[in-house]
Length: 605
Image (cartoon, rainbow, N blue to C red):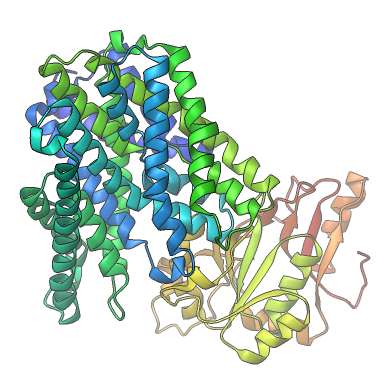
């Protein structure tokens, strides 16, 4: 039964989701458990053989999948995000790539048995990073915005550039084509690659934007339309020039993302789902191709290559690329401390290794396991080390426990003040100029603008922020904001006030189906809390003392009408939602309870 292709394909997809979910829950770089799963079902247990499942379609399937991943990455690029840092990006994907290539090739030649030609090819493959590994790290660590932007842009644009470099090296050095081997031939290939990729990607983006603006595509087909045009651009570009489909997909996504008054949200959301699926499947499939014999890699040589890339190549490339830039030394150090290898390195190595083995090239069987060793090593090093390094440099928070509060009126400010006084990072966002001024006067971080705007992420500083509290009196705005920021914070950390009571002739409210988790419990909507403050009530902090019996009596006091939050002694924030027990049973010594308190019978802080 396990030999059935249907069982194997379905099983790989289910495994990809399950392992990705597990990695997210354990907060570890997802690539590591995906690669481990591929090793287990492939060379270790022999449950799946991707070459038998896909046959001759394996290489083109992998290439198309990588193109779709880069298309999704291009959709996330906004020109405003890199204002003032274009020079750094350009140097990283040119000078930085050449430095990494040279150092990688030299170290490979020195510490392995590979020939000079194979070492040069290995170095060219290892220049790429990629959004498949950078994206999850940025989402987990959330470093300073300037560093995060550079890392994201570099990871997306370096993939097609790295693929071009690897292909040219493969053809010119290993296949020995006379024209390709000359400097003029290499330059001509590079120009053709860039010209075709940019031309096709731009042309398809132009046609797609016309179709979307004129509403030629039905709304429910827009996500599928986005996937189709990415495949079309990849196909046309690759027919004209080998591997230029990757650049065409990147340019297509980038061009669509930066056109004004063009909605790409549906395409982005659908493409993100496809990207998650493709990443999981690709890493499992490619690692399952490795044989048991290839697992016996020369570990000291692999370790030397990994450490040189991490300690020498990356810092040198970043140092030279950021000279005379706006970045301070903290930001430059963090940039130099992040460069994990991803799916492009794995896919290119797998495809090249297969062709080289068929051509009888010596050392071809060592290429894939060596590259996979570098992928595992760099992901492990950067996955474990990026967070502590960013926090040590003051460019990230240890815990993303802060709150983005939508609104800055009296109710919002009362809750924000209590949270901030309890040590919780708070950012208030409002479109009311006076409320914004009042919040700033009170010493709170405040943002004046519409959080539903397309480029709000470029203006809103979310350092240390891990959840949304939508507290405005407008229930529909709260619902839209909760839906919008679910992609940023996750559905479990987007909250909104309960909707106001509605007439019996109204069946439902959008918040019931589309919004975030309801705060505090039914009945405690904006009007109810505002009225409570009018009556003289307060949002108050209550420090839990050392005596548990006194603490419980304090929390069960009739003066406490509603517990809103519990700030734990370790600064973790527990948000009280509808249906939560009151008081929370795990409230302990040192915790701070934030509650609505009837001030007619005072309770001390």
